[in-house]
Image 1 (cartoon, rainbow, N blue to C red):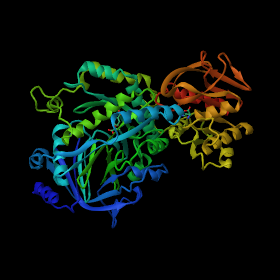
Image 2 (cartoon, rainbow, N blue to C red; image 1 turned 30 degrees about the horizontal axis):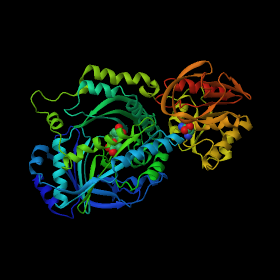
Image 3 (cartoon, helix red, strand yellow; image 1 turned 30 degrees about the vertical axis):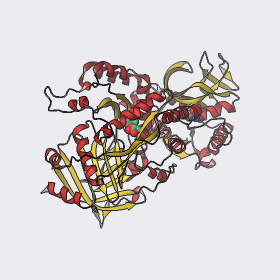
Image 4 (cartoon, rainbow, N blue to C red; image 1 turned 120 degrees about the horizontal axis):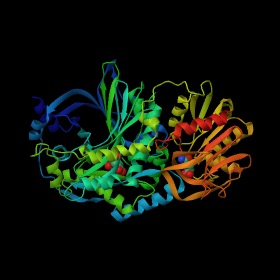
Length: 627
Ligand SMILES: C=C(O[C@@H]1C=C(C(=O)O)C=C[C@H]1O)C(=O)O
Ligand SMILES: NC(=O)CC[C@H](N)C(=O)O
């Protein structure tokens, strides 16, 4: 009876329904109901006539405009299915019933050719990361094709192929709404909220299996790659910013783990914290994953706007399932919309991107996009399916399936990565805010890099009562009233006289110095402070975006994470400038920290997971500024 319901729904072109196979489940969920398109996340109708409702939503990328971020606007609707019926279908019986119709593709290929994509990668590294705009950016291309088979039959065929041949997906799903179909196998949970616990699952680092499949040796080579390791650390930092914004306990990280799929293996962390927010607010604060946009996230949207030719539609948005819970609220389960085919009136699109970092190899990123698209492209018949991968995905095969993650050498290599990270974020932090600076207030000025949420969280641990204020909202009165002002980091060239944001940060730094009132200046603001003291600013020969280094900070060596392209530079050996004490690199003269009467500054990000000595150094600098 339940299986016949699927047959009925598929036969009705006006019906809206969703099929979801969650990781590890032996059933496929079938949800159906009426469609409602809404403008804002807050409009998602979780309550109707006083009754909590289950809602499935497709959240398009353009929704980032709700956060004040830029996006090409294609009008893709924030589409909700108000669930009337939620069935569980046994997977084997469902597979028997799903069509397996040949779906020939016409006019198929990538909209951006390989060499053009490589050229975009080079441009993003030079013009964006190379100009201090951020650490990592995801730029996408689309595989497109046309089909002549009926849309719904094609989509069900592809869903069957993904269920049968892909593995390691968080959700394998198919969404049918009038005029719009999406079918995918996404590895990545963006945000999950259950009983007050919020989980995020940043996945980055991509190992494309060689012909014949992954082996222990090839996987070990991948795990040793600095680029792939640092890429994952950077996205964990960016997601911890989001966790710090939504969770009272800031969030802690566990992992790293492997995500083994049919043709590639990713590396991932889990971030966990507690939050009492409405799930729609959690979703808004976390729109969208840095793993599919970049960091800092707000500027990543501007970079995407500059370098992508077509709007994103649902790519990098989320599918969000809001389910009523026992507390009268809703749980949220929201995978990222990647590895998905979108189908409208016989035309399909499979968008795919790669995370570009300072040491990206353009051709390597080209093949990474092919590798990531391969699972879906194999399922829709655009490329040959990989027999080896499929054999491995058969858990009933003789000898069963043995995950490489279980190998002791691999497990040891993975866990050794954490030795580089800050214990603060690896351990439970509790909510005990009775640190050494209790009784003092701080205003943290955000210059469009939400590292301020992590800074604020650490400052609260040190006892301060903290508020975060955006650079364009904070008033002079706010600046004057705080016991401590923390002038935050931000994208861009610190010498840029045309930027209103950088000018305002200059005013704030100057105002506190003139008042001789406690100031801590971080990264961009450290550069601004250095400039004010007469120290020269210059681009680094190679950006330090996402780099960990042990550097001298006033008599102690500190292991710190860096996210800068520019630096303040003195003649090597310099120890004071004007009235300020300088901690600089012996060889290059690059200034790592400054301190003087009532102020201190630091080039690195003490709040980053890359800063093993972060909170300790933060405490030293705040203590100096407040003294
Ligand atoms: C951007 C995509 O995937 C993301 C980027 C990854 C990477 O660059 O290593 C890995 C997994 C995903 O978070 C995509 O599939 O389009
Ligand atoms: N994170 C930052 O504040 C970076 C500062 C500056 N945009 C640079 O790249 O050097």
